[in-house]
Structures are given as structure tokens and as C-alpha cells.
Amino acid sequence: MVVSYYDALLPVREPRAGLQGVTAGLWLPYRVLASIRVPGGEIVIAFVSDSPELSGMFGANWAPAAPHQEPDAALYALGKPASRYGLDGGWDGARWWSPDEKTMLVCGFDSYRLVKVCVRGICSAVSGDDIVFLHGCALSVGAESDRRGVVITGSSGAGKTTLVAGLLRHPELSVAVLNDDWGAISLSSGDLVSTGERMLHMKSGSVLALQPGFFTSARPGSHSRDLSDRDQAARMLVMPESVYGKAWTTARTAVQQVAVVVREPADWLPPGERGAAVRAIEGEGGERDEGDTVSIHHHEAFFNGSLILTSEEDKLREEGHYRRLLDRTTVSWINNCGTSGDLVENFISAVIK
Image (cartoon, rainbow, N blue to C red):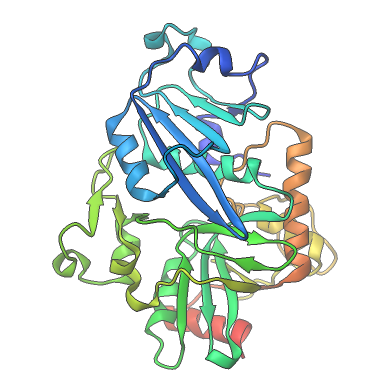
């Protein structure tokens, strides 16, 4: 898999002696329990920090778990460098993950974007082998008698939001949105459920693409700026109904298709065999199966760099999830090489007709 932006910035490392001895000596005033829905249950994550800003955003983002519920994993987000907590400087510059203790520790934590990446990686690491977390917008599309579950994925800037906005405005389509950007799928049943997020962490540009005039029409309290971002106007927490309106749902669907949006020349051909599709979706390049016409090395993974891959076993596990997903779904490649209207029609032709 390619090295993501976050892996390059803060690589995941496994401590030799675990993290319990380190976390036991910390006094962090904020502890928030979040419930993240998966098919057949939930994953509970404890967010422990000395940052009131990040703790507040975490609590606003996710549905609360029961106050005394035992968490499945913990994320320790320390807002200052390691030395400020009496720790060796070697603890800086990495996301430390103990698979046995199901605990992650990060020093110098100042970004809610990084919180989101850590949470996604932790959920993938602690979930059972029947669950795969997928980066993408999950939809239920079609008439009541012929609805199908679709996940729209692709690299940043490929046109996912443009496509979803076009589908929502299409006069002849019935579209329900279950997850905006990420969620869990059962590999045995194909079931997908809403993560249960109370507020979505979204780019401001994506919000405006989906809901033009949002900032003049949104009711007070429906959104708040992400002040942890260097560009404080770039991202926000926003109520899903304020963005998606009546299209937002917390119902379940069965995923039948995965639509991968790419931005390639008009004569581009998608990968042919399943092995090539796996490599392309994961972002690997350099190899081509017979019938492939180009290397697709620059397409990032479904998981958008959030996976915790500290061993070859971790990588094989996640690759196995990919292959099982592709075995039970139809993968359609949607090339965004024309107008936004063309993009929508390409999706309808590939997925619905």
C-alpha cells in the first residue's frame, strides 16, 4: 500500500513494552466514551485527553456510549510534546499502538483530522474478521422495489461529492444517504449501517457543494467551525440533516456495488481482473494484469490512510477483507473526465441501468 499523508507525518509504531506503564502515569482531565455502530453491534472508544477543544469535538461528533461501559479501545491524545509529561522525546513523532492493550498514544496532538484518522484505524484494528470499514459515501439508490446499496469511494478530488450532489438533485432518482464518508460493512451478509454520528466532520467546500447557500440558511447550532485546523474556515462539524436533508437516514442497507470514482483521460480503461482491482483500489502500482492499460498507482486506498499496519499480518488481514468485499459486490469504475452531468449519467449507466 502507498504511504499516506498521515503515515508520513505520524507513522504508526508498536511500543516494545506496551503502553500501560506510560498511560498509568498520566493525569488527563477529559475522558469521552463514543459509540460507533457496526452491523450487529457497536465499537466503544474512550478518548482521553488534556485538550478541551478536541474532547469537545469528539463528544459532538459521535453518539455517546453508556457512562460506565467498558471501551473496546482507547485513544490517548496528548496536546503537548512528550517532554511536557515527563516522557522521553522518542515518544514524539509517531502514533503508538499497542494491539494487546488496544490502546493508542499520540503526543503533540493538535488536529481533529488526526483524531478522525486514529479512530478509523482503531476501529479497523479491533473489529472482527467479518467487518470491513470502508472509506466512502454509503447510499441506498432506486425505487422501493429495486433499491440497492452502493458505496461511492475514490481518491481526494476525484469527484465523489460532486457525484453525490448530482444524484441527490436528480429528479428521477430516490437516494438515501447512510454514511457521509466512512462506515462498516459485514463481509458475510453485506449489511451496512449508519455509524451513528451526531455531527459530521466535513470540508466546508463539500458542504456547499451538497447544500449551496448553507451558511445563509443553516439554523443556529447546526454547525461549528473546526478551530483545530490551520485554516479555520476549511472544515466543520455539521448536523447531517442540515447537509443531506430528508435524504439522510439511519436505516441499514445491503451493499451490492462499490463505485470507484477516478479522474483519468477519456480513453482510460479500468483494471480487468480482480487482482488488478485490489491493487488499484489499495493504491499500489507497478504491476498490471493482462488487459490493464495503465498503472493506477496514485489512487489512494478506500481507508484513506487510516489503517494500522505494523506487521505483515496486519496487511494480509486487510487485503483479505478487500478481496472478500470484491467477491460479494460488483465494482464499477466511474471516470470523471467530463461535466458533472456526465459523471452522474456515467454512474447511472454503470450502477443502476
